[in-house]
Image (cartoon, rainbow, N blue to C red; front, side, top):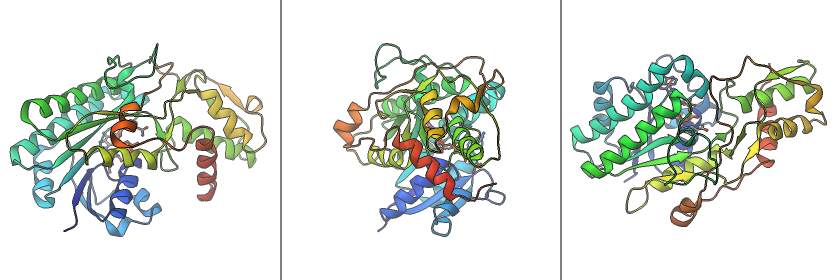
Length: 322
Ligand code: NAP
């Protein structure tokens, strides 16, 4: 019998790559979107799997819709990827961010308990919970010091998952994922914006690209590899939480330099740093320690900077340009 997976938030970057990953392993894949009638499922179409997944309308705000879809699908594994996932937007929509992340996760945990199903549960925690990683790369035992409503929401949801695991014996895990990128990332995210900007400048469609603070440093990985870590977490005998990261940190300026250098351009002649993209508060440096994931899951990031930037540029060029 094929195993059954249910992905909340299947239309997003990670949901689409995870769906492909699970289909490749013989799973029957179901996924939710807040409104299937209007969702384009563009990412599933780009990956060529739109016809191979079963989609359902469900919103994490609505306990009944979660119960209905779990009851109908009877999943062996549930992945919660649905969220307002933009850190910058969380300053403008803090209530929606808390609601979609914290209350949404709680609604799934309660639905699993209420139905008494023994589905394994994966939750998308985030490196944003750590805030600045000051002295050393963040591990599973590093304290949370979030710097945004998004980070606060992810921190609270993370502890809610741990609490349900301990209090009720649920098989529930959180992957604390550091930034991971792909051509499926929406253009509002800075990495996609840089890649698209560099291409537009190289093709003569744009003179100057305006960006925010280029001194911030991040740990960037390749999204298709990170969904494999999610799946591996749910194959362990015992549920646990894992940091998923490359373990390397680079300033955003390096990302910009590499994207423009791909076209033989000097970024300093084409980029201006403006105040408009600055957040009320931002993380300056963020890097993770993936040692536990490597030891226990056998998972290790393969795609590192600068290869990551080259892959993103090539993938973007393969898409129809505006
Ligand atoms: P994404 O592309 O933004 O996908 C998330 C999906 O959640 C959306 O496609 C949307 O699907 C749904 N959603 C539910 N409530 C929403 C709301 N209020 N506003 C906007 N969308 C909402 O995110 P992702 O990059 O795949 O990330 C997957 C999960 O991992 C998220 O929980 C994210 O916070 C977390 N995460 C991501 C990263 C990263 O670097 N990508 C790092 C750490 C953690 P419908 O519109 O179809 O409902």
